Image (cartoon, rainbow, N blue to C red; front, side, top):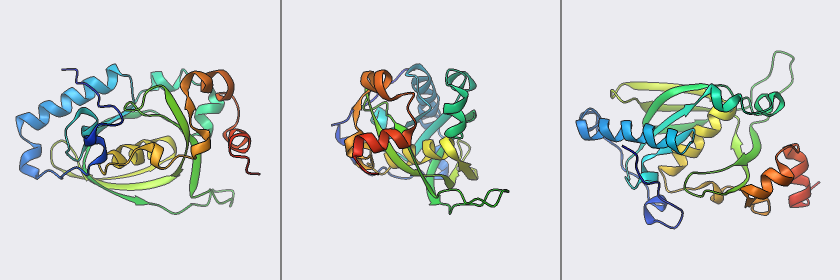
Length: 207
């Protein structure tokens, strides 16, 4: 069943959500909720959806980054963001740990934080540069109430951070570089193909 996505200004998006018990997770209402969240996310379309976004203050989120979405991007775009397909899965009661920067085989250290444009289904039509950790660990339960540990890098790590923020009443606009906030139409017209570092320099006037 398609659900209505809550928009910025609705109080549920600014509240902390409660955790679920293992027995709750396995009930029919929660399983139906998860199925409807996947359907709603795909119809939007999006790569993640948290329960507060459909008006339910529970610590549940669904994630899927389809190869079909990535194939619409340039190789440069997807490579720079370390974006790869992510199979559909559920995170419940997630605990997020930001992981330190790792050294590449070449010996060059990767940054602990990266900046890219980000958007949200609860704030459609807009985007902004948001700093996020490059690598994260997430300890959570899946839809069967089984413990799961996820190690993610790149765009997948960004999706996880974005959705987990929703579970604590945080939106990307709380973390964005405010001078980079813009309408999606102008982003597509002027900024989409420009390197993010150059966008940041021009928009924030920081060398």
